[in-house]
Every structure is written in structure tokens, then in C-alpha cells.
Length: 77
Length: 443
Image 1: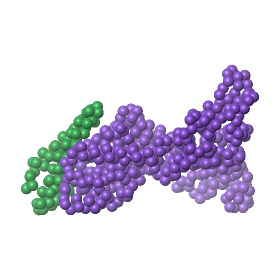
Image 2 (image 1 turned 60 degrees about the vertical axis):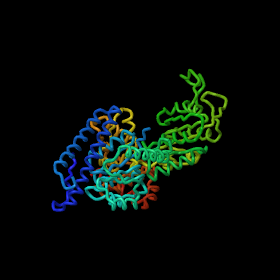
Image 3 (image 1 turned 180 degrees about the horizontal axis):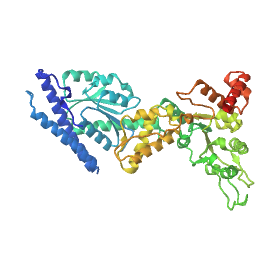
Image 4 (image 1 turned 90 degrees about the vertical axis):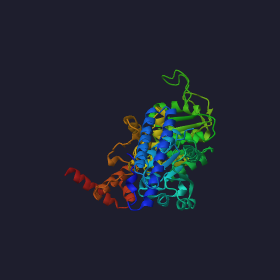
């Protein structure tokens, strides 16, 4: 299931909180994408091709989250 | 090196990150435990000893600090806080808590792997303590007591009587006593109930060539084979009583004669016997000679049934799963929430039944998640032995009374006076109840 950064979004009129949330979601997405790629690499080295492909799908989902975040920039961006 | 007993809890609502971290944990031969909420993780952590917890600061149902409040942190290994919203406040608060690390996302994989290595080292030390390298798996107080007792008696010469329901692992206990005894000879296991009574003497003590029809060669019996080692006599109560007399003599003197032989042979054998009956009841019922019981039971070890071992059932299921994964080069794991089902089942066949259920589920599952389904056994059979009865919700008092009466009568070989004494009623009451049962049967 894809991550939903808007689940705990602050109220629309609280700009600083919205910025903090945006940074938080950004950090999460970068973190997930990076670790998925690292894990996929390790899985491939261990010969687990199918599992590596699943993990790369996770990386792709995380990158999609990043794209979505960058498409809705805040003052923090 | 792989250590499937090492476990790492990853509590993070970012599913991609959590799954990738779980993959890395699996690749390092450890068990990942995934949770996305505090409620889930508390269920997972309960009763377990987790070697490393990676806990996200901000979760859908609270914070990492809330999570800590609900668990016994002394029961687990290290706890690392992970956050995508670093702040001075949370860092300061983390310092005051038993967190070993405050990790800011995005994480460097090498940092994670250092934590995983530490978890594996901790697990190795913990597993040495839990299993004592003797094949017994269990963290419940009952099993800890048993394992400690094995450690205390293994290096003595004491005979041991192991009592436990079928499938509880009596031979594993006997074998572990031998492994830790330091005795140089072999561990020889004999199931007294699986050998025809008329052949048991020659199998145990050996025979000389021509000593009976068919004895074309000299046979070295199990007692001799176990010289300087350990002889495990399973189902000792199935041994014919005359042979029990002879076994007692062998135990007392350390000497025996092969069937058809003349000279006495000496053997230095440590005896571990086992029964799935209540030993005292077996003595009372005449299945086990009282003098042999006292000689065998220098030490009596009682193995608890699996249903009384709490979360050991989960540890064991994971152990069997790890063995299967190793054998078939797979990375299957127990489905989330299966712990409750495993702990809710009575496991009348004990560890043997659990092993079969895990294997069945493993072989019949295509995906990575194993749903263990215990075999459904009629409640009347569950856990009943010669000296115990089991009741289930829905039974009437009359049914319960009847079951207890009949079981007690059978225990006392239909002796109504003894039954009345045991039940604390008059003999007349017993007669009246039996008459009522007869009337009901004929009605």
C-alpha cells in the first residue's frame, strides 16, 4: 500500500506546521527510496531476484511520493 | 553467520522503508518483525525478547515514547529512535530514555547494518542462555526451570525419569542430558513399547548364538551398546514386569548376562527412562514396579505440555519455520497475528503436532506468509490422560460429575470404596450414581 503523507496533515491555515510536515514527508520518501535501492542491491547479490524486484517496486513508489511532494511545494521547499 | 533466533522489530508506518529494512534483516539471517502501529508492535513484543527495536518517532496511534511506556524495556535489547522530524526537544527526551541511538532520516544503510550486527551478537549470547546448546527451545519459566535442572544433573551419575505427555520432547531432554554429561559412550534410544515383549530382553541385554530359535549370531544388546554412554528407555511402563525386575538388578549392580550366556558382563550405563503416564499412577496401576520407580527416579523431570508454555509455542513455530527455510532455501515467515491462534490452541499432540502443522502450512503455501492451522480435535480428547479429564463450556454439571466418577473408578480398577474416598463421598453415593447412570442408559 502506498504511503499517504496527507494522513496526518496539519490544518491548512498552519503554515509552519505544514512546512514541518512537508520536510518530514520528504525525509521519509528519500529515506525509503534509498533503503529500498540498497536492499534491492543486496538481494540481487544474494541471488533473490524476485524479492529484489518487489523491493525495487517499493523504491518506485517512494520516488512517486517524492514527485508528488515536489509538485506541491511549500515555503520550506 | 545466520542466527534465526535474532529478532529485530521495525515499527514504522512508512511501509516501503519498513519492508526494505526487514529485507536487510532477513538477509543477515535474522528475523524481522514488522509493525506499522504501536498497537501492533505491543502485540508482537509481548512475551518476546527482541534484540533490536527500530522505532519511528511519529506513528499513527502515538509516539515512540508512548510505545516505550507500554512495554517492559528491560526484557528487550537495544532500542533506536528513527525520525523524519528531528528536534532538540525529542532528542533531549530520547537521551533520558533507554534509546541507544537517535537516527535522522534519511538513514545511511551502514549505520543500520552496524545496529543489526549488534543485535545478532546479543541474540547469540541470549540463545546460548536459552537453549544451552542442547536442542531445547523455550523461554517460559517452566522450560527455564527444566533446562536449569538438566544443567545441574547432566554431569552426575543419577538416573533420570522424564515424565511428559506424548510429543513434549522426552527424547530431546534425554539426548540433551547425554550431550551435556561428558560421557564418552553413545546415546542409545529404545522404545520399550515398540519391541515385542518376548524380544525385549534379548534386544536390551543381547543374546548368544543359538540361545533360541533364530539366534544365528551373537547379538550385542542396547545396554552393552550404551556402555560409558546413556541408555534412553522410552515408554518404560510398557516393559514387562519380570523384565523390570531384571533391569532393577542391572541398575543396582551394573552387571548383566546376555540371553543364553553364562558370564556376567559389566556395563557403565547411565539410564534415562521416560513415560507419558503419571509415574505414581503407573505404580499404583501396576504398570511400573515401585522399587524400579524409586531407582529410576533419582531425579524426576516433568516436561510441561505445550499449552502451558505460553509464548514458547511461537518460538518453536519460528524455529521449525527457520529449519524449513534453510532446507528449501526460502524466506517464508509466519503471517501477522498468527501468534494468537497458536497460543489459543490446546496442542494435544504437543510439539510434535505443532511441527506437523508448521510443515503442512509451509508446504501448502505458495506465498511468503504462513498460516498455521492446527488440526481440530474433539474437545473430549484434548489433554486427557489416565488421571485427568477435560471439560468444555456447554457441558452440564451432571456430565462433568459422570466423567469424573467414571475416570476415578477406572483409576481405582473399579474399587468403589477407593473411589468414594478419593471423591470425598460415601460408598452409597457412588452406588446410587452408578445406578442412576444404568437407569439412564436403559431408559
